Image (cartoon, rainbow, N blue to C red; front, side, top):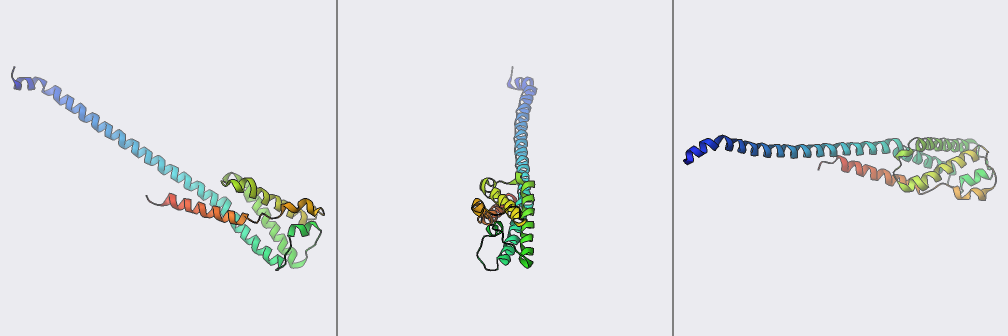
Length: 192
């Protein structure tokens, strides 16, 4: 048998083997590209979910609290009018505020009520351990005591309530968390 006869007999088999090898290599490449595409799609979806969670945290929890806290702080500065005293202690001691002071204090109490509702409604969005476990419970307790002292339901025993003054670090912590979330959003939306 000559080489030509051998190739004529083996030709269709060789063509089939070469076709199988090419088919295998092409399928392997397609599978790899499909995996990479699915991985990219998964990463995109995860980034979209992360972005949506950040938007919810900002829009539903942190930014409204931050704004209300700033308004309350401004009103409280007007209310105190340069004087140095603890409003909760004054209310518990029975000090009555009239006129403009009563209006300002009433609005501060109303803002406190709004903050309480935002926190209760969106507590699942709290992602800062210090806020969740320490500062927001202190803030809610303070708002509760302020409202009840303002309404005259809590009187006397100033020492009993002296540890429940306003948690002054909360505004800095809210500002920091808003800035961190904005930075995370910036990182998630940047093109790599």
